[in-house]
Picture 1 (spheres, one colour):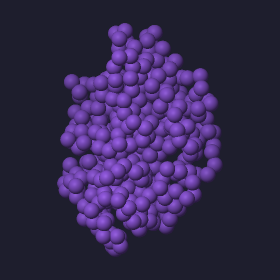
Picture 2 (cartoon, helix red, strand yellow):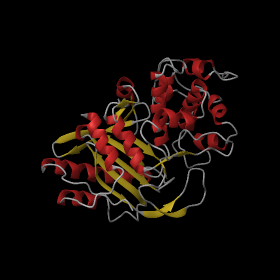
Picture 3 (cartoon, helix red, strand yellow):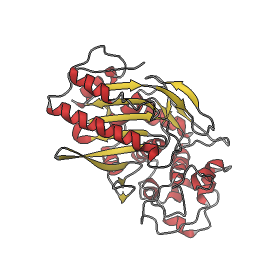
Length: 368
């Protein structure tokens, strides 16, 4: 049944359907909000049970990771877009695949055992940090990324360093690993370095081989720093449709078109809340987990968030994927992502209403 559903996804993401029911048109109104230009919305895609319910693209200023100046862009379904820190969630999936392949023994393996740097950190507490601690951003490092747009944040300093891996390894351990979630892009730089070490492949090549090709994703880009290191934490560029494919694969327990890509056991741990995070959310392996109330029911969502309003939401109870791209880069939180989250809430409410009214009848696209 899931293979048939995934085939529907594959076909629906390739073709633009000219028909729409009244319900789908109403949803299309939601994904084409009046404040799209003011909120610099770039793209929205809603997929449920393998069917694309609504999709809309816009025009507006954009800026690639590492660039200083914005440029105007007209977006469409084939347009690669920065997903910024959603890159971390993709790295988490790659770690899971590497574990499935036996390249990494387990999430509880000490990170230094699988990274094997030329010189170990001076702080002996680094020996206590495991792959799991990096995935859950609970390594306990002395790290400040709250003001990521500041020149004084550790993320900014890391990106401007000559070697991001060494920059992270030179941070001291401030508290026992596993104690608290502290947002830390450096953790995912280390995970990418682990992947490159255990696979013998550059990050983008392993991603293509292990994840993107099995999903039929042929167009992507992973940006590097000026020193030639992949921005594993924030540099991946995908189309919203391909981002939605990844969400569909996760909701289908790691399977796509009849092929298993990643184990259900790893995914179950990855999208489960391990530690308290921002707001009232929890954090898994590169994913935030939260709840939204619609009527008298609470819906749990799994989310991947990126600077500028990039969002990938999964709602298991509705078997729904929502992908949002935007250009509100480096705005102080919560303005950075608020508009995307409010849009997701409106989409969620509308899809719940559609379910109560019998569900969508046709697929609505605007894939210009």
